Amino acid sequence: MTTVYNFNAGPSPIPAPVLEKAKEEMFNFEQSNMAVMEMSHRSPLYEKIHFHAMDQLREIFHIPEDFDILFLQGGASLQFSMVPLNFLTEGKSASYVLTGSWSEKAQKEAAALGNVHTLASSKDQDYKWIPHVDYTELPENSAYVHITSNNTIYGTQWPDFPNNVNIPVIADMSSDILSREIPWEKLDMVYAGAQKNAGMSGVTIVIMRKSLLESANSKVPPSLSYKQHASKDSLYNTPPTAAIYITGLVADWINEQGGVEEMERLAKEKAKLVYDIIDDSNGFYTGHAAVSSRSLMNITFRLQTEELEKAFLTEAKEAGFVGLNGHRSVGGCRVSNYNAVPIEHVEVLRDFMISFMKRNK
Ligand SMILES: *Cc1c(COP(=O)(O)O)cnc(C)c1O
Image (cartoon, rainbow, N blue to C red; front, side, top):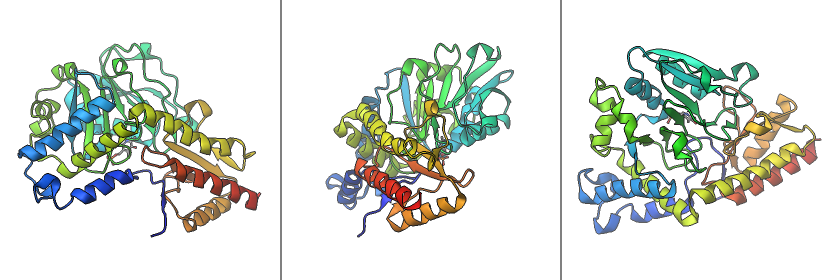
């Protein structure tokens, strides 16, 4: 087997020891002679997996006791409509900070259900940075403010979270969950599909302040109601059992590595390897994001011509790199630097970027 340097934006690498463990346990999970995905979700053995994943997430992500952890399906995309379904009640409006395609999509789904308001946007600057937000401009009847903490496509990230906002703050953290410490006092709800930083596709992690549930719309169909899922510990219907199992293993792995603190430290170290090359390249590589809004998770850059970009991506592919193409909507190149990407792979990429530059200057 030749080594693959996987920089996919999502689904993305899963830590090798996690895959190893899942392989070992595949045919016989804890002497049950069954695979996890063959078990009843009502069995004590599965319940152990389910609650272990929750507890371990709470531990490594320092989630306070007054927050619920939910395991839902439908991806982060279903949250785009579950959030307004549950919280955008009659007579209210929902405020969105637009920082990229995903926030636009989130707002669009809410607009199908009620009134939306754009609180700030950097769209006319090609989403190169996180815009300044004046929270005093929130409309009086705002149900919540929605932000996208990391913009997977444009490669920008909120350096900090909104401060002193007197309505619920909801963050789509699909591409930076478990990669940075969270000041929980500043947030009321966080959601993320697991397939970037927290496991495999199929489960969506929702972390919600319990008091938020009290204000939730009670007329929502049960399968789309946070209250319903929370009151059943995410066992209202069959949860994505295999994906939850993998998320539990990923959380164990993060714990063994030193926790989310260590993930954050490593993300900075790994991202610096690539940003330094961009900054020292005299314009051979140009970053898309403004320096102050740079993402530690998705590093986006361009080369001087499309021809050169094509050559870069072709040679990279031949050298074993996967997933370096920018998102189809923006082009260019993108390095996704999620938790499970080993620093050694980033070092190989750095060396490749240097050698490509030397050969093509
Ligand atoms: C990937 C991504 C999504 C979409 O996630 P799905 O699980 O495919 O619905 C939403 N928001 C952000 C920020 C993402 O990176």
